[in-house]
Image 1 (cartoon, helix red, strand yellow):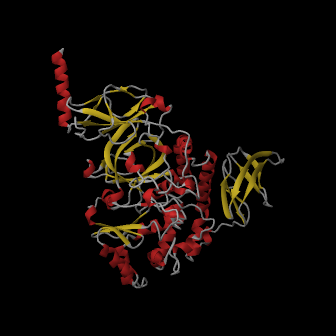
Image 2 (cartoon, rainbow, N blue to C red):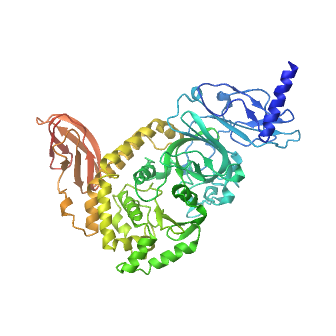
Length: 614
């Protein structure tokens, strides 16, 4: 018996030595149906110390002496969700949060010196959660000091917050940038009931407007310093790449305060996917931070030189990436400066100049990019959120990203925004940002090509059928997780608010699909008589229909109105309250049986007769 025991200890030491003296876990992290006891092993000369709150073990951490029971007793005791990480008006304290179990362990010698890397395992126990996850799960572990320390924590207002600054909402530790404000983290990705990836990486706060919210966007960095140079997993079904240098975790709160649907960028990326311009792969996930539930996020590519290398198989060292039509983020700044200086001198009616532009810019891709931004009414573009790239021997191409502030045209002239020449305007448009667009539209061939392309897109990738399918898929994907997001961040405020905002997006796409071609042709002064539709009164189309139809109505003011559908004897069959915006409105009518109906909208004098044939 003693010989067997001795062999067992020697085997453990051999395995630990072969892996750089790591702690060995009896169970790998991942999904488990029920709680169990977890055993840790290591060489006998060392003490195993571990934490359950996501922090890096130290000499003061608990020593492992017996198996750890993975029950509620193993939940993080830190309750970091109670630590205020945003200004008062942007912070919400929930009563409690969901947990998974995170165990981090390392070997320490008798002097308290750590002698092994930190090993991390994440356990999702369904019987403890009381549910199965409908979305992939990201578990992120960051030492709590790196997150919440007053001087150096990246998650808190901290020493860099200045309440007396007129722009105090843009101050705080979370607004600090650069490698100095990158912290070591452990990233685990689980889907399909299995752990797919688990490695150390760097983490920084991402974005601008989301930094001072409780649910913060993050950028993850794979570096050799942390162990692995890349995240080696095919995260996105619409990409062939299996390795990524950087990843972004966007939040559902990205559209706050002007909308609470939180999905507009994700929807826009799906609209962009079949187009000729570049866009970002994105997918929804659930995130746990140090074992505590942190809500719905969107895992997304980061639009930098590494992204270009993955997407186009071009060496990232040869790629120049430019932001805001001026700032070279990577590569050779002269490449962009020389290109833009030449733009300012072009006579686009000169065949030589137009030929140079055609060789310097992927025109068809840029037309798709421009039309996408126009179709979604991006109110945070083109002076902002504009990024392009080029490489040796490659024309300039634009990357679509950040569609959060879009799909609302009630008070915004997207055509004036597209071609602004006013030198006093700097946001959201500017003469510098519209120069290439104006040059393109001044060329009769490209102008006509853009009009024809928009018609093609409206009939295909931007069609009502495809837009409706995308919105329905988004609703179905996120609805099961929405309750937990609301409980954690009080955002959205209610499920009905979220559904109403999604319906607003749905209706925007619906009416936009109907009239944008005519609008654009009028804007370009192209004859649109063949496509003209008379919208002078309430209209139903198609009419007759085979069950469902669209209701178009023009309003001179914004208001709530009750839709009523009646039979020919005046009996009420269907009622619904609609939010009417000033200008054109388009709504789907419900599925009806064969017959003739009268459709009325309270506050509008004339109704419409609807014939359903099946």
